[in-house]
Length: 398
Image (tube, rainbow, N blue to C red; front, side, top):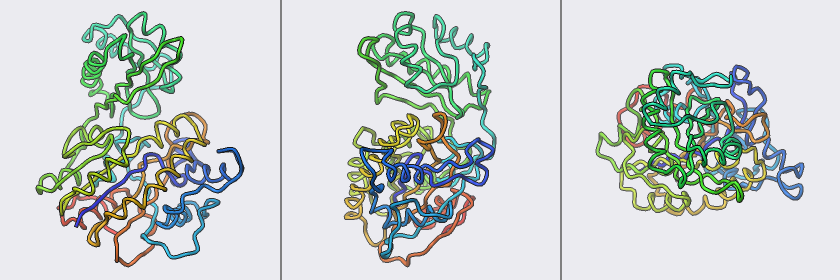
């Protein structure tokens, strides 16, 4: 009896009912990618989005629940192998911590702080305190921006001046980019730790270190040494409950950062996330919980509005999915879901407020449409029930 919770970061399936409040009415990450593939806009020719394994899990039917239609190429006539549904977020916002915490059974009971879209966007006293405490000559940026674009714009000046590049987005976040060699990775982390304390009073969810390498001549590239400094969830999550119960807990990718290193057990991170997930699942002890985040859908393709890259990433995951099933025992539960949307056809470069798929695979279980869930916390409640853990107090098991 084990459980695996797999978050396909940003793989939304249609605008949430309140998406208009976020400027996202009409957003549909999976639907618009599938349509782009059929138009030939996402690759070298017209073709369906090829995700047959996710379709067998019920992805197309989850899309139908969310939007009233199945995206082109995601129809399936044969019997499904998993139960399916769509979930709507109760927490405000469309950020990563809120989505993940709610999936883990803890909806966010407060409103995050955000920085305005003015230039400069950060309060003067915040930047003065950061420069003084971190002994910085100043900062560059100080605006809402795409991370790759602002590094390209200010990278050369940053290397000369040693001023870090500070920016934000529609999320509750303070991001600091710096060159690993010219500025130093350890120094970047130290600056972020100082910033984390300074933004606590503003109720900012995350400070993110964004290291990069390269030169003005060759161009700049962000590295895998990103580090998130998040506030902890406001109450115990299923990770905390599993840890408290002495269960085997393994987290893959950026889960450890999202949950502020609380209850996250053995942490596995590198570029080969699917391989790490397989290794962890094979060794996961009875009663254990695996929680994985596949971030590239969001960071490498969604935020960069790369429709073709997003489609290929979905297809790559789909091709690998049957390998996981070879290790699933009859008493195990595997849930595939998402934390928000990041429609690569949408305006801007931010997340989109969307519903998410909930695809639940348990060998031998009766298959069902679990309907539209009115909180992501239903996922956490279901896992807690399956593993016989104490409930977090939110959500209804399906």
